Length: 246
Image 1 (spheres, rainbow, N blue to C red):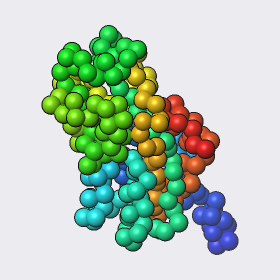
Image 2 (cartoon, one colour):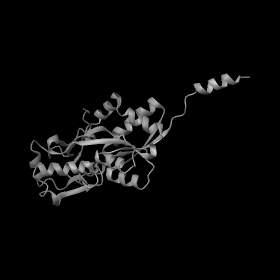
Image 3 (cartoon, rainbow, N blue to C red):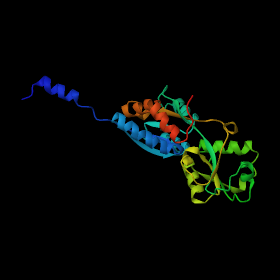
């Protein structure tokens, strides 16, 4: 028969079961977040479940009481707003990724050396962007077109996705001839033509993470946020087309 001290020792030696956290992820970061969640689970024993959508939609869901523990936003403003509203834990906000914008078309000849000419060409029947009212990548696309002096010119050809993932799908399916999409969506795409939009044409797409009030006492949520700051997490992020953090 086991003595009481030995029984206690055996229980102490048994690893505690990992917790589970529900993470809301901006659509542009879905692929990278999935890879990071798997790597984090393997390293920690915790489990991460992802829900993706436009930042605007995720914000609305959080306001309506969705039980998310963490938000990986496509901007910096939304986590700051949630913190100010008391829906996020103060002091937990940080930048986890810097997004890159690219004009992309499955047609290898559509986007040449002159992107302005390509955008003004009659061959570009429809141009897809994410809705600027919902998605920061849409704001960046609008700012780029404004900077190029083309915003008014393309109005009749614009089609808008609810998020940057939907915008990519419009272009990939042929519903739009080209579109402004996240570099992460086409970083491994070897078909078509593209133009990497210079950073000076739009405000930096600073993507911030924050611990939400629902996850304040969730070890998996806090652990995942800490892990996102590690070199391993940043290497995964870079492999999906995100710029290195300063």
